[in-house]
Length: 221
Length: 245
Image 1 (tube, helix red, strand yellow):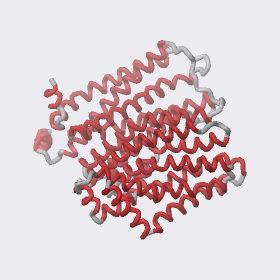
Image 2 (cartoon, rainbow over the protein chains, first blue to last red; image 1 turned 60 degrees about the horizontal axis):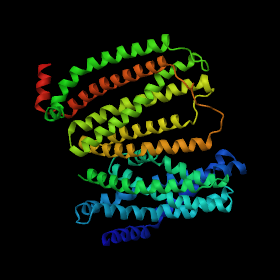
Image 3 (cartoon, rainbow over the protein chains, first blue to last red; image 1 turned 60 degrees about the vertical axis):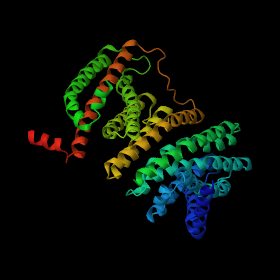
Image 4 (cartoon, one colour; image 1 turned 90 degrees about the vertical axis):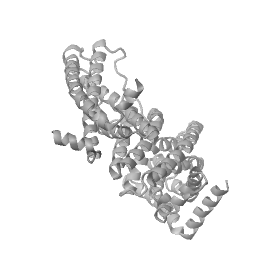
C-alpha cells in the first residue's frame, strides 16, 4: 500500500511541475468538441442530439493522446526498469500510475464536460448524466489504455499504433457512455447503461493492469 | 501420444509436415469450393423475397464465420505461446492473422455488395456488420503491432497479450453493438431473412465454410513455413535444407 501511495504521489508531483501536459489534453478535449458545429452546422436540435457522442469521442481522443506519456518518461530514464526489479509487486506500481493518469486526465475531462454540454444546449439533468457517465467510463480508458501504452512502449510510430490498438476496444465504453446521456434526453431510464458501464469498469480493472504488467515485462525483457 | 504431438511443436519438425499437408488442404479447399458453388448456383432454390441476389450468402456467411473462428484460433495459439513459451505458437498466430483479416474484409465487402440490391445501400450500421468492422480493426491492430516490433520473440509476446485482450473484448463489443443497434436503428431496414432456410442453402453454406477452412489451413501453413525459414535462417537444418534444394 505504501508503494502505491508513493508512486501515485510521485506521478502527481511530476504533473504539478509540468502543468502544461495535463492542461494541453484538457484544452484538446474542448477544442475537438468545439470543431463539430463548424462541420455539421449550428442547428440546435441536431447539436443537442449529438452532444453526448461528441463529448465522448473527444474524451476518447484526448485519452489516446495522453497515453503514450504514461510510461515513456520512466522508460527513457530507466526508472521503469528499477520499478520492475523492485521487491514491490509491479501490479501495484502500474495501478498507481493508472490512478495518476485518471486523476490527471479522466477526472478533469469529466469535470469540464458540462462546458461542452452547455455549448450543445443540453438540459441540466443531461449534463449531470454526462458527468456521471464520464466519471464511470474514463477509468476504463485509463485501465485499457495502460495496456496499450505498455504494448507500444519504445515502438517506432507508437502514437498512431496505440490509437489503432486501443480505439476499437473503447467501442463498448462509447456505446454505453454516450448512450446513457442520450437515453436520459429521450426520457428512458439511463440506469441500465450506467450499470453496464460499471460492469465494463469492473472487467477492465482486472484485465487492464494484468495486460499492462505482462506487456511491460515483455518490453523491458 | 502427447510427447509425439509436442514433437511437432519444434519449427524444425513442423516444417516438412506442413509442406506435405499443404497440397492436401489446397485440393480439399478447391473440391469443397466447387461442390459448394455448384450447390449454391444450381441446386439451392431462388429466394422468394430477394430473388437471385441472395446467393451472395454463400460467400458472405462462410467468410464471416471463418473470420471470427480464425480470431479465436489465433488468440488460442497466442495464449499457448505466452503460457508454454513455444516458438511455433507465435509463428502460427502471425501466419493466421492475414488470412483472418482477408476473410473479415471479404465478409464486409460481400455484405456491402449484398446490401445494395436488397436494402438499396452499400452500408448499414447493422450490429453484425459493425462488429465485423471492429473485428477487422482488431486484426489490423494485431498485425500492425507485430510489424512494428523488430525483435520476433518480443513481437510474439506483445501480439499474444493484445490478442488475448481482444478475445476478452470481442463478446463485450458484440453485445454493446447489438444494444446500440436496437436503440438507434428504426424499422427502416429489416434484416430478418426467410424464417425457414432450405436444407440445400444450409448445405451450400456449410460446404463453402469448410472450403474456407481448408483454404485457411493451406495458406496459414505455407505462410508459417516462410516465417520459420526467415526466423531460423541461421540454424543448421535450414542451411542443410538449402544445400539439398
